[in-house]
Length: 217
Image (cartoon, rainbow, N blue to C red):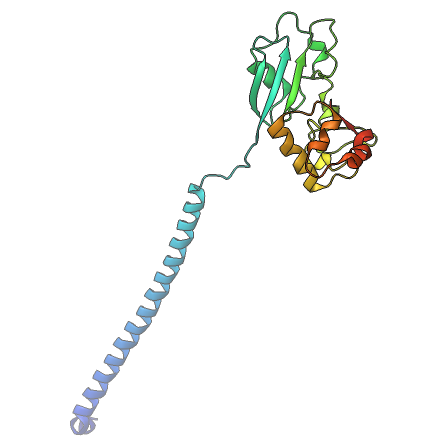
């Protein structure tokens, strides 16, 4: 053994040094891989947390609520025209108008009814019937349904119906329905069914066709 050591001492030392260096570099290599993997994992975690934070910080998107205009008349303290949200009800309109007077007949009013654009809300006096042509709040749902649908045989109110409901009239498609609504917005409510002929695309023939299914109130 001593002879081998003497004869190959430098070779043995060199091999030991090479082995130590190999172990050292192997350790460094695997340590670097683990560190890189840990860093990658941390980056993914940080990105995930950042994404969650951004989502939490974003304001919740809400469905926009359309603004409508109603005309409230009769036994309220401040009758007049009011801007409201389409989700509000007759009770909200009455509150905006200063509440009911002492003479108001609350039994004739549907306080839970939803308001619709261009709606006329008439609050009658006790024992009074609403003036002809002006619906009270208790009868308005049948004239201006908020669902956009008409019951079979029910006439369509050309002064309050929306685009979808107007298309229930004979000969009225999407373009004519839009034209009717545009006319109402520019000229105000129709005073007679014959006034429909002033709407683009509606002539005498179309008027005669839709007359039996249309009403002004």
